[in-house]
Image (cartoon, rainbow, N blue to C red; front, side, top):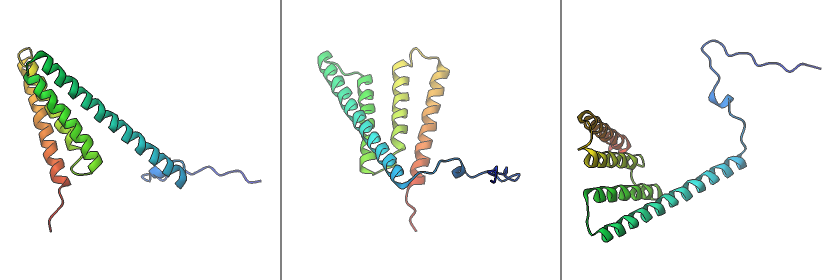
Length: 151
């Protein structure tokens, strides 16, 4: 009876491939897992869209009840709009999906600066404005990379 051989360590500089660490997965199991993850993703996106619409409706009702519109209300509606746009991009496949979270972050930072600038230290305003600039540059880079090349 032969003893099972132990695997030899890789030669120096030759690291094992990533696939050496993954257990073998059959086609059926892979298909079920992929379908399941896609279904969970779509359900969560639908919930995000419904919650966003609910938040926007609640905000509109609040505006009507108070009979005043503030800059904070307008910026919050932009956030709601961008979240809905992000979900829409996922379902339609039109546009770069990574751009919308960047836009949401830019709008959220701008809202923070506008609403809290009186109570903030000046250097914090500069840091947040720098973050907005960095996010805007990231959006430009992503847009340029995703643009089809004309030959």
